[in-house]
Length: 272
Image (cartoon, rainbow, N blue to C red; front, side, top):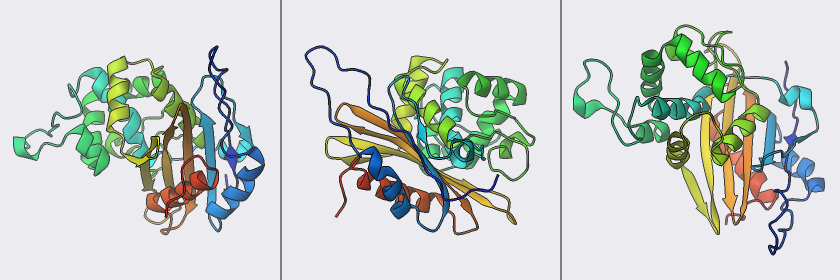
């Protein structure tokens, strides 16, 4: 489905405060969302979804059909793969090196380093060890978009062919919210360690966690993501931004624009 410059912004207030606690004022008035999005994502085909991490937070959408369109997850696929790898014991923790068969020990790469550098072959090796059937079942259990496991399994998340997993921005934030709450059907430890692996920028009274990625066929449309969350005070806001276009569409551009939107909505402080 063709993308147009469209915004889904889902920002729900957290569940009712406990007795004796003052309720926090909303951050980023709803009336400002459309204008802030137009400023941040001017000139690109994009969609943004934000929601509170609290259970039951419902998205408010300007075009639910368009922003429910499923796209290749690109490197954001590293998030569920890390959860699965840790849960299945393929790595005892995020700091233990993973190696391909025949690879010298000193060339091993940890999940933490692979996530932040990135090093795609690490995730290819994890998927290969698990196998397509078991890997597909694991993705289905996580409710991670449409978990079609295409062949070759090593390239399935890169959007190079019609097959492979696909996920929408709305599904991205739903998955990340459940990960943050520790509600995925995996061990609590695998979820907590995955959250710790995701890079973040420090902000006053909190942080902004980021995972970016871009992919697509060499001669076709590209997809670029910037997903993550803002922890600030007692509030957590989960977000997903996706752009679609030519070679100028990059994860760094999606992140830059998403950062500007978060600042404009007062979800993060403005940078100098």
